[in-house]
Length: 104
Image (cartoon, rainbow, N blue to C red):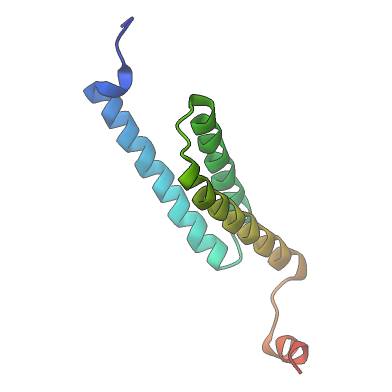
């Protein structure tokens, strides 16, 4: 369909809503896994999807300057969650006695 904006058709709206639902589901799964310090791979996937979305907004010129701060904080939160999952994988589970010795 030359000259037709696909995003304005019913099929385009359905695909947009499906993409939003898929991305939200991945974000919730990543948040749960990162909270349990086991989300290294899913956190990395969500971070890459978020960076790809930001790149698309920058490329099309729709990235508002006010949202840049919020997007930066989201990226930093994802990066720190991935770092925590990586550290939990590297150091293994910590028991209470190891944590008590740190705060003595």
